[in-house]
Length: 341
Ligand code: KG4
Ligand code: ZN
Image 1 (spheres, protein in one colour):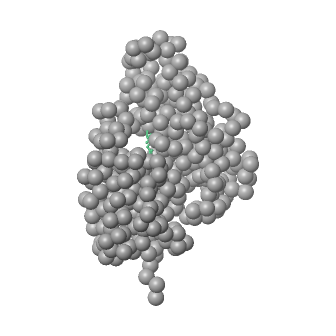
Image 2 (cartoon, protein in one colour):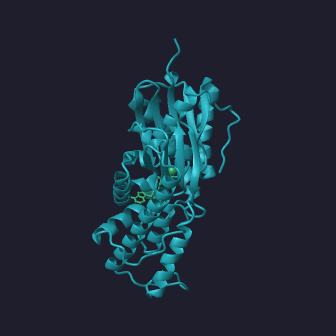
Image 3 (cartoon, helix red, strand yellow):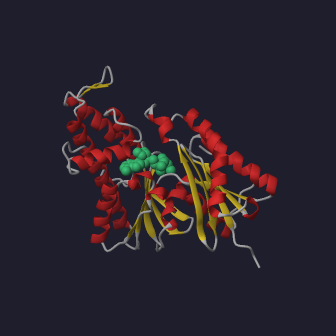
C-alpha cells in the first residue's frame, strides 16, 4: 500500500521563519513560526541582511519544533516543500539550502513552492472552498487578484503595477512616524475615529483591474504637504497630533478597502460564474477590510473565506499544504532547484 505523503513545509522568503508538517490524510499536524518583526522595528522596515542572518539562526530550532509539535520524526517525512520564490535572496537561500541538504542526505523528495501560490491556497488550511473562485492576495510584497479553478490551477486577473497594499500601509505609517509594520497600527488608529473617510484620497483607476498603490502613497504625502503637516525638504512630519494621524490612517484604510471592492466588482462582472471569494495574505488580518468584503459578498450571495490570522501572514503551513497537493500531482523538483527573486 502506498504511504501517505507527510510533508515538511519550510518558509523563509522574508522576515518570518516558518516550518509545518502536513499529513495527506490527517491534514495539518503542526505550524511553528518565528517572526522577526521586533528585529526590524527600529529600522522602520525589513533590513535584508538582518533578515537572512536571523533566518540562519532560527531555521534549525523552528524545523525541530514543527517536527516535535507534529510528533513526527524526520525519518517519517517523505516530502520537503520549500519556498524558492519570490522573496529576499538571502532569506530564500537559507530555507532552500536547508531543504536541499535534507533532501540530498536522506533522499527525500523535494518541491519548490511559489510563495504567492502558498498565500493563494492558505484559506484551504481551515476551510473547504468551492471552485472556481476569486482570490485576493494582499501582503507586504504583493497584491493580486486570481481566478482559481482547482488546486494549483490559477490565473492572474490583476495585480499591482507598483507597490503592494501592505507596502502602502507600511509607507504611510512611516510618514506618520508610526511603528513597523504599519497595517495593524493604521487599523488601530482608524478605529479610534470610527473608520471615517476625512481626506478622500484617490481610488485608483476604475477602468483597470490592476492595482496601483504607489500613487496613493504619493497622494497622501502631497495632501500632508498641502495641509502644512509635512515638510518635503527636511522629510519631517510637522503635525504630530495624534487625532490628525488617526484621521489620515482612517482615510487611507477606507480608501484601500474601496479599491479592493472596486477590483472585486470588476472581476465578478467579467466572471459571474464564481462560487466564492477568498481574501488572504498579511493585509487579510485587517478586520475593517474583512467586514467590508463580507458585506459586499453577502449582498451577492457569495461565501467569503478568510484564513485565521496565523495563516494570513507568512507561515510554513501554507507551504506544506501546497507541497502536499503538488506531491499528489507528482510535481517534484530536482536538487538543481534554485531561488528566483
Ligand atoms: O503576508 P505577510 O506577512 O508578508 C508578506 O508576504 O509581505 O504580510 C505583511 C504585510 C505588512 O505590510 C503589514 O503591514 C500587513 O501585512 N498587515 C496588515 C495588517 N496586519 C499585517 N495590513 C493591514 N491591516 C492589518 N491588520
Ligand atoms: Zn507573504
